[in-house]
Each structure stands twice: as structure tokens, then as C-alpha cells.
Image (cartoon, rainbow, N blue to C red; front, top):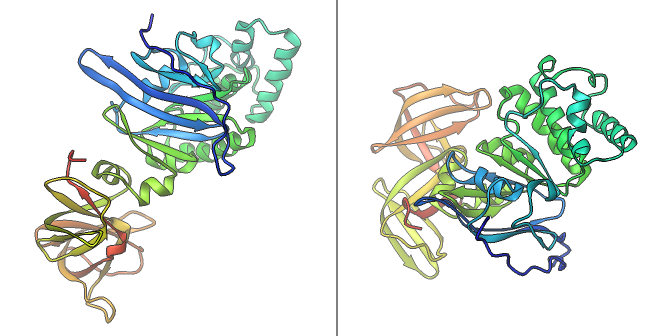
Length: 376
């Protein structure tokens, strides 16, 4: 039995500014395994109908947090409430959540219709309701004609649809997706991201998705909760966490970011100015960043590259060390005073090869000055 103590929730107040009411409230949740904090004081309010991703590297605690919401793992501290009702000590089958697992967990001996009906039958629903709900799920998930197939006779995408249909058939208040698309190959995964995003928005169901895939989180989510070592370190829309990262971990984990160590940092008039050894100077708003060492970060797509200085931008001289064609962009690695800087440029815009001189222009407005390492 868990030792967690439920907190008081009223669950009735809608957020201001016309926002939707809170559906799921996670408050100060902790889970430890021995001396390891798998989830450390996690708090998050999720709005009704919102699609939110727990995003982070392997071992950051995102699946543990999802499993506590599902009821498969008990929190040591804190509370999780669904529409004002604490879920602590509520068994999984009574939590009104639906779960889709990484490898689908379909019953191989049961046909598609039987798999979809399983949760309804386990709840002793009337046969007529089960038939109606299964037919609706088959249609909704584009599985018409597959009801008599076994999971082993389906493609990966079809099995994924069956798993989603089974989870939705019981009409959960919250849908939980644990790396639900990771077993698919790249092209099918991208196709299913679109299908799943459209479906979830059509149903307006509150959804929590666990993923380590940044592109997947960006493609599907309304908001993203970035996790690091058991803690939720930043929450925001995909654009917010990408363009306004709150820590060195977030900016390095999301996308491709160049790290330029700052040799000198000064604060004046509400701004912080950082200067690298090569003379790159960046001034940003001083938001109270604390630390003994700072880095300047700039994303690879925000580095401009040219074979010669231009009239508007003289640039800083460097030497191309590597050129890689990635389809939508060409990636250039340029040695700038001993620091390797990555620039992603349109594939047909430059004609530079390894060994060529190049000039880099880094727009200060696209840079971030953040404490180095773990000094947040």
C-alpha cells in the first residue's frame, strides 16, 4: 500500500483567460528506488482535451510518471487527481484511463474485434453496447474488414491502430501513450503521427504521451514537459521550449545547438553580455541566470555561412572540416578558432567543400546565454 497522502483538490475552477478546465493534476509526486529518485517532486496541471508529451532521454523518469498516473506504480509522495478526485490508492481498472503500450500488448490468440472488446468485456458491459462500440472503433481507426484477423496477420501500423482502438473503446477520460509509435519504422511512424494527431483532436480527449523522440513530441503535442533526471525542468508549447529554452540541458537536448564557451560575462542595465575567446559577443536580457561559467548557444539553422564576407555581414573566418548532405539541408562543420560550429544551410545555396575557408555570421537575437552544465 502506498504511503502517499492525497492532497485537497476542488478541480472545479477553470483557468483564466478562457482556458479549458484542469483535467489531470499532478502535485509534488515523488518515486524512489533505493537511493535513486526516479521521479522527483513532479508537478503539472493538464487541461481537458490537451495533448501533452513527457519528453526526455532514457532513464529520466517519464515512463515511471506515466505508470503512476495509470496506477501500475504507487507514488511515495504527492498526489494525482483526475477531475478533482484523487487517484492515490485507486486500482488501475477504476481510474478511467486507457493505455497504449510500446509493443501494443495485443492478445495474439484473439481476433482484432476480440482485442478491441476486451476492456469492455472485462467491465461486464452489455453485448449490444460492446458490438456497437467495437464497430465504431473499427470505423474510427480505419480497421473495417479486419475484425476477424489475428494480430500476427497485421502490419505494424494496423497493430498500432488496434491498440489505440482497444484503449479508446472503454471511453477513458485520459489516454496514456507509452512510446506508442517507437516500434514503427521512420516513414510509417511519421504517417501515424499525423493520423494520431488528427484523431486525438477530433475526439478532444486528454492525452499524455511519453516519448524520447523530439520530432514526435513536436508533431503531436499542444505542450511538452521536458524531463531531466526525474524532474520536470520546463513546460511549454513546442515553439516555447525550442525557442526559449530555460537551461543548458533543454537547449542541447532539443534540436541541434552549438555550444560556445563564454570567456567573459558581465551584467549591466538589466542585460547580460557574454564574449567568447574568438570575440563573438552576445547580449541578452538578464533573467537572473546564476553560475560560475556560461555558454553561448546558437542553433545550427541560425548560423549563416558564406564563402566570402558580405556587405551586410563581414562574418568570422573559419575553415570547413566536414560537409554532409541531409536532404532538406546541407550540414557544414566549420572550425572557428578551435571550436567546431555546425551550420545547416539550404542544400543548393553554397558550394563549399572540406578544407575551404568560410565566413560565419551568428545573429545575437537567435542566441542564448545559459549557465554551463548543471549550474542552474
